[in-house]
Amino acid sequence: MEIISRNNMAKHQKFLPQKKNALILDAGGGTGYWAIKLAKLGYKVILTDISEKMLKVAKNKIKKQKLEKNIEVRRVDIRDMSCFPSNYFDMALAEGDPVSYCLKPEKAIKELARVVKPNSHVIVSVDSKYPAISRLIAEESFNKIPKFIETGILEHEHKFQAFSPEELRNLFESNGLKVIKIIGKPVLVQLIPKEKREEIIKKHFRKILNLELKYCDNSSLIGFGGHLEIVGVKKRIQGTPLALKSRRDLPYRIVEQRINGSPSVHSNPFAPSLNPNLGEMFTSGQNIKSQNSYANKEEKS
Ligand SMILES: C[S@@+](CC[C@H](N)C(=O)[O-])C[C@H]1O[C@@H](n2cnc3c(N)ncnc32)[C@H](O)[C@@H]1O
Image (tube, rainbow, N blue to C red; front, side):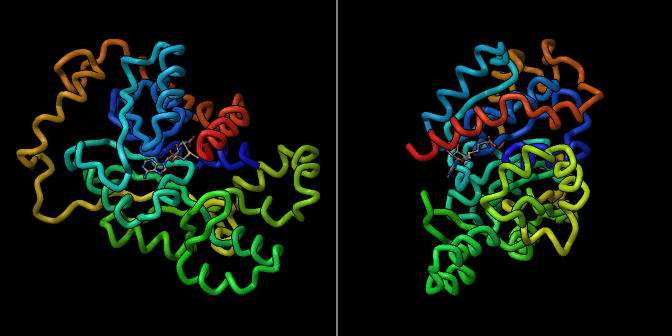
């Protein structure tokens, strides 16, 4: 199922920055799954996470792949990214539910919206309400359902905040992010009875994947998603020139200098040019399962 969720990112290739050496924030980036892929495409990435353990694994992976010059790793809480200036990144990513886990989604989205430049994309994936409701029904925990539907908060292995597509849309819109699209991931797999799920996916993987890619943004199916993924773009505040920076923005140029190894913002001589076949980045299922199960283990410990 995870492979299908990851592959759904293929839908979002077009939202990657066009500019070579663009700076991307991978917030709640865990062990670096996305940061490494983005760095290999030539982007500069700042990978942040609240967990030292996850960051330690990420650092080792980055070192092994000799990507230290392209990825900066920092311990930062997604709810308070005051270490970064406003209008700083060319894109921000918060994949794999950090916004759900942090339990203060308004703060996290507000921060993600603040740190990206106007007209830049923010892509976030969160837990969806539907699978949790179906689990509560299966467990016959009917008394928990009304509160969960109202608050979206539930404790199952860990505490998390789940969303309906409408709630997620409102969260983005109320923080100055214009919603471009919302997808469910996966949407159809959720509807296969649990006991048959693994067997059917194994047997018909390609067919199911194609259907998922075709219908993940179908408005009548999004809400069935195991997770929801939203793409927004930061609205430009009218009358605010893009170049306007606050005084507290100034020291943060240092971060870019450290990544580039040079004081010039766009002068990384080591960055390869962008891979024109961006689809490869998202459609390879290699190592997805092992990476993710590691991340999950880390998450629980
Ligand atoms: C399932 S992992 C996803 C990691 C990575 N984004 C990926 O897709 O592989 C969720 C991550 O969110 C991080 N996280 C949870 N709460 C956070 C917070 N308040 N601030 C930053 N990261 C947080 C966890 O430490 C964990 O690494």
